[in-house]
Length: 407
Image (cartoon, rainbow, N blue to C red; front, top):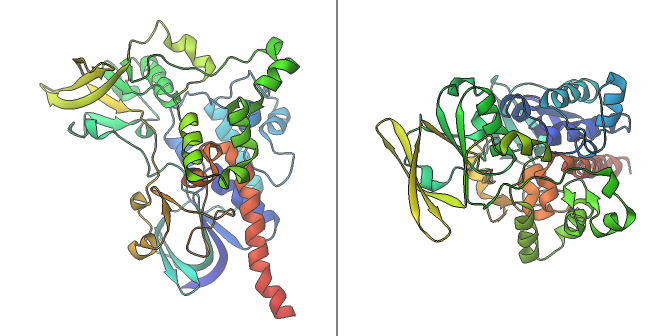
């Protein structure tokens, strides 16, 4: 058993890296585990463009000179707060530069077990190492939360997959592929499938594909901004409130929280994808898959429209671009005894306004905290709120016993 550290961070996505950066600046003894930006580097379409605008595509740095804007300026990369889409490779290069500067001791290994011990925790790594930590921050992102509708469950595994599974779509060349969903994951993936020589077909219950509004500098007058204030998660006063006042959101009644989250969970693609899809990729909209079966080597989908009328279509493969649902039962490193003690809101952990779960010393940030802090936690920009808050709280908590001993 190795020496105890003050904080162990599980996950090295935007939230994990940002928390580690802020803790490092504060001199807190911490370790962070995971593949750096693993979901972005290994599970996003390789040629995709970020949906978020430039001003909402930052990791949370403990110094002001490491925003996407500042880094792009130093690198000579074209940047605008709005209207200049950011490619995935550019974002990954920015993330790697962030890691080298602020989180140089990231350990690219996986946590295989987390259990409680006395007033702390015991962690086991896939290297076989076991050590103790006084506090643990779970920044697990979407890794274990891919959601595939039950109506597709009858398909054999070689005919059904989730959008999370596909960075490279070249293996689908010459095949007919149904993409279920109309959000950014579905649209980005359908476009890449077509670029790879496949024949994608978008299927969604929405009557039309919604795209984010195209930035228009001429429209950005004072009156328009007052009526539709911009925020890091969308335009309008509701989005502005959710983005700028997560602590007020935290204190709202549960019913109002759920309504606000639902209003921000509607699927929408980046504005720049419209020309890549309309008139180029076949769609069946206003229809929901209600059943699926394998027949003669094909995946046969039964689709129902809003009136209940049904049709069937067949494909070589079906990809569910149907989002993510937090469920702690799917987090493999949590011991059963530890998991059973975590209070929940729906299937997400109930956390304090400092992101601490019902188990003292165990924290959950990012998507896992969306039920409590709102849709801001669904986006990487939420790290700009969560990371400094968690880091400041942990610094105070760790320093308190030292002050008491000194007194």
